Amino acid sequence: MPYLQAVVKEALRLHPPGPLVIRPSVTGLCCKPVMRDPYLWEDPAEFKPERFLPASPRSGGQEDEMIKEEVLKYIPFGSGRRGCPGSNLAYLSAGIAIGVMVQCFD
Ligand code: HEM
Image 1 (cartoon, rainbow, N blue to C red):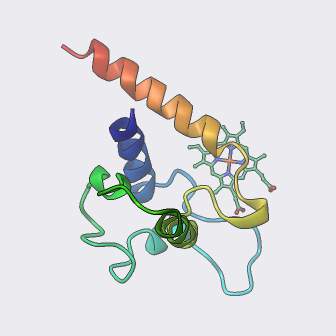
Image 2: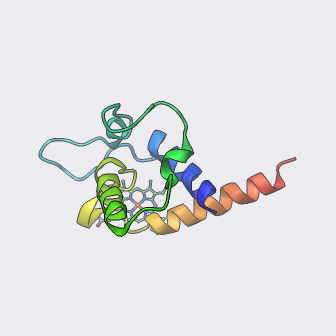
C-alpha cells in the first residue's frame, strides 16, 4: 500500500521519535531541523504524504538520484553505516498498526 507507507514516512519526517542522533558527531546533528528545512523540502511544515509518492515513472538514473537525495535529507533512522537496522521492520509495523486502526474506524 504505497500511500499508507507514504503517510508513515511523512509522519516520521515531521515527528521523528528520536530527534537526536545520539552518536557523537563533529558538527552536531539533529534530524528534526534537517527534515523541516525549507531549502530541502517544499512546504516543510505541511503534512503531505504525496511527497513520498513517485510523481511519474522514472528512469533508473533518476531513481538513483532520488534515493541519494533522500538518504541525505530524510534521516529519522539516522544514516550511513550506523543507521538504524530496524527501519524496514519499523515501517512494516507502523503501516500494519495504522492500517488495522483505519480499517476498524467507524
Ligand atoms: C520508528 C521506529 C524507529 C526509529 C525512529 C529508530 C531510530 C533510530 C535511530 C535514529 C538510530 C541511530 C542511527 C544513527 O546513529 O545514525 C537507531 C539505531 C538503531 N536502531 Fe532504530 N529506530 C526504530 C526502530 C528500530 C527497530 C524496530 C529496531 C530493531 C528491531 C531498531 C534497532 C536499532 C539498532 C540495533 C540501532 C543501533 C545501530 C548501530 O549503532 O549500528 N530500531 N534507530
